Image 1 (spheres, rainbow, N blue to C red):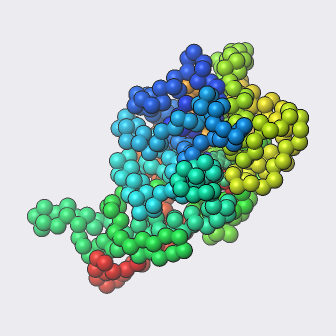
Image 2 (image 1 turned 45 degrees about the vertical axis):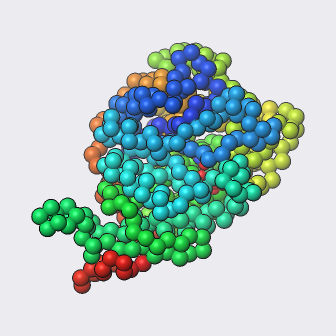
Image 3 (image 1 turned 120 degrees about the vertical axis):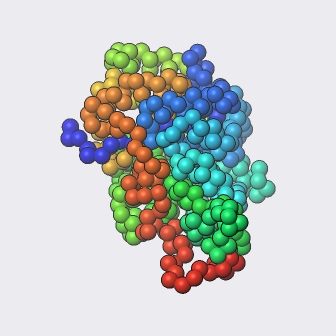
Length: 466
Ligand SMILES: Cc1cc2nc3c(=O)[nH]c(=O)nc-3n(C[C@H](O)[C@H](O)[C@H](O)COP(=O)(O)O)c2cc1C
């Protein structure tokens, strides 16, 4: 198989909860995910990932609960399907303190947060991690969240993205436009901490947001965090083409991945960016063994603890379809709803019945596992890269922490031997390490337009420009 020139990028895919993607495995005797609410669980994980030279830890999040399946939260609670779920941002400082290189891609739903405050939270974490923070931009897909936040239901799918476009504009103004580099002089002798002439008020009056104020944080290493995005509907891809630097996809097969990657790269060019300005990560679950037989045994062992029904309840929330109302072989109505359009479309295209989904969710979730010895797993990962054009993987967890440890001890050396994976940590901020073009957004990114124009004359006074 021809070797791709680039190194495979690797994120661990996780969430601040018990059951994330591969449901039911928390009941496995060796699984530690029930300790998600302790700091040691996360600092241990961060150190493990740093040892494995992972590029990042990608932390999913939801606001709201999965109450679509059987019209209630009973299965969700019993199986701990992303409930209880703690705040993901709170984890980062502790993990940053025990690592030097690991990046963090953290999901925050912008629908229920004011941009002014979110801008400061990410700036703070960019400072504390020394430029290792990324933001997975989501707008939510759960009516349960909307109801909890005082709305009768969510905004329609495409409108959520329209709002998000404006939200990002506000953030770029704050992150990119609010302060000049070096404005914080820290000059004790002159008694000037910040030079007032180099900080400006942001004025934004748009359709959805009104902001007049100074960004509360001084410029951080990356200013704008590395921007992740995970929607892949048509509107979702247009949003990604404008804003995203990393896109996360979970296609049903390689052909769908190839089409999705090609469409995204084309949209990037239309948006005035380069086709490789976005790194695409595909979700994967891996069960490796020292031998093929050991991998198969491990998989059989895991399967005994996995919960297919929990996988189905999760998928019900993703698609907005209550599979509890369907007989095993009855055709399912996937007509457009208001959840994850790409998920329902895939299910509709394949005509997935409840029985078929239960078959697919053998390991408790929507990622079919790659099972094998190091050579087999590496072959499969390599074929995903060469055949689809994705740049790397978001590796979901099965039994933790052993699924990460096994991957690091068994698969990574094989990938390194093939020249497909780094052998040392690259230096620099997360953005620099991913793209090699510096710490900040490149000039061709939409966010760069909100930087103040280079001014040959003295700088505008504080309180001036929008
Ligand atoms: C692989 C993948 C991962 C996602 N992760 C999250 C998440 O952690 N939290 C969340 O609220 N939405 C998540 N979403 C939902 C998306 O952010 C987006 O709201 C949804 O996909 C609807 O957009 P689309 O119809 O354009 O796909 C994810 C979607 C995909 C496809």
